[in-house]
Image (cartoon, rainbow, N blue to C red; front, side):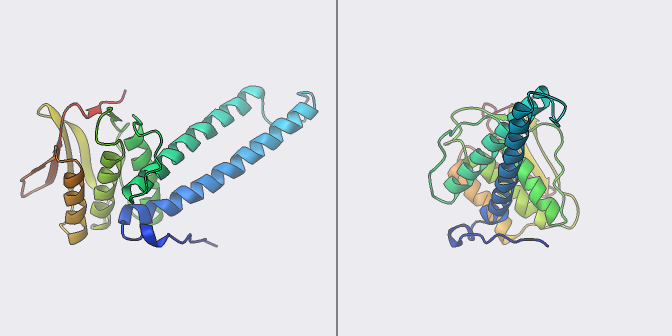
Length: 215
């Protein structure tokens, strides 16, 4: 049985928030259950005096906790960024170098549940400090890619790579009113982005000092 989480009315006007908020909430619930199981395992191991009753080694438990903490940080940042995009400023850590990675990973996961595919080639570039308030570029790119993917029936052909001293976001998708609105919103929030005229491909140029190639 699939449980569908209700999206608050304030978020329904933004396709990105409407798509990702239920996924974030679902992952947060899963993470909470994972942490509870880990805590119970650690308690059992402590009571057993690290005897044979423990199902995980100390190293395994430490790695599991660290993984959960990293996931919790990513989810918290994505939730804050989505809230900021909706007009509610709750993002405490505005500059998150891995913000684009966090946003694209959960976007790809959501699209997969819709029977769509957003290929992620390698690590997303890191976001430099001083790009807007920190959330506009990750949410803006994710919103564009969400609508571009939904506009077709095949995995989206897209890329984000260094180009001519800057960075270029390109994607092959049929034009739609929603997609054009998403692009216009991104340009309005970050005016330094340039829309490149190209009849064969959608192209956006970003300043070169906004992103840093990830190792």
